[in-house]
Length: 235
Ligand code: CA
Image (cartoon, rainbow, N blue to C red; front, side, top):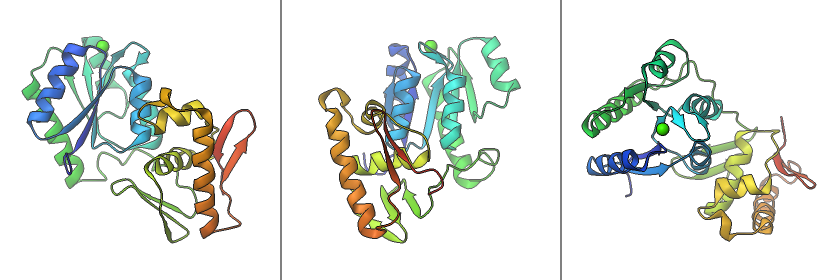
């Protein structure tokens, strides 16, 4: 799967998702499926994707809301799947931040063609689609390389494990926002149910030690007693 563009499918109908998974795999992509907006956002927080295929009608809310949430942190291309013309009107009429749309029913071939076209567009003109999207908030001194899963803090590369990288990435993407242990667990672990709250604490402790080794005075991760953790706003 190395080098294959990762595509996130957020779609609650398993039959449609199966068709899309198969079609995208056949075309050389590495697709992943989430059945709810919530699960999709957690997947996006955990690792980078090249593109998102987003159903408008999801069981836990509208795909528009999910897209808005995505756009607060990421310029990843989004293709909407809509079931009705009324939804299509919104996709076309509002500045939701989607890059393309398909109206159901559509053929798998149509979808893969759109995916390729959007990826081509975003590769050749990186600023055109992302111009209206604010860049993700960047914590001072921190550089996160999504592609290579590496982090540089005040110019020093940090040796992080996979979970440490994911935790730091989630926190640093939204300085000032407090994340509960459950939220961090859901964002960073494949199987959150199998872990304990103190697993998060243990990994946070390790990340802190690595940050401190580079910049002892910075201490950017804040503990909120009884609530969780945040990345220090403005620091
Ligand atoms: Ca649906």
